[in-house]
Length: 296
Image (cartoon, rainbow, N blue to C red; front, side):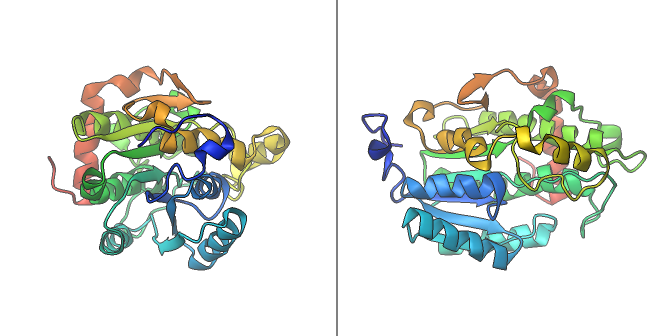
């Protein structure tokens, strides 16, 4: 992306003019705040949302607050491979370019729930959905280069371990294990993606947005719902949580940076397992098989 002089707000207006940005889980929380931030920078913003009505409410809010009319909604259910494929096909047909993809949507489930495709929902939505969506949009990202992929993960990745023997908790399910595993998968996917995209001018980075006060985990039941309720007053606002996401998606400072983990606009080390090349490659292969992608 072109560098702009100055660091004030005025110098950033229009930074993303003519750039197409797609955000998943964009009708509330960090996703909506990210969409708002990118729209303020002049981007053409597409909100990927499961609920069209809530997505349209978010769209109207963003247009009103930013006075940027280039905001639209695309319906997608990340719990359905068919829906993801249909969304990607429609998106590619409507938008000739894609400059920024923010994979933000995520869930936490205290009990094992299976998607329409038969996958454990936390692993499916947090990892497989974004793995498939990103791959289906890769040609557009490459054709639009320089472009960026930003994967929203969590510090929970530090407690994660990819259990290939029981990847989807069929033998024994625990939300407190499944969620960290999915967040570690986000990081592994990011690093492997960056390696595969070397030389394309498409960057891939991941970010921990902080502990943010959103609807995340409130309806999951169990310990997570209780913890969210207790600690909500001490959590960051969605706007604060989105700052590093927007920065990674737009700042000239990180134009050529790829395959890194960020927090508070600074590079951080992720957990040791996230740097294991064998785990990353195996996860890619398994994900390709599960989502029906041709392995490369």
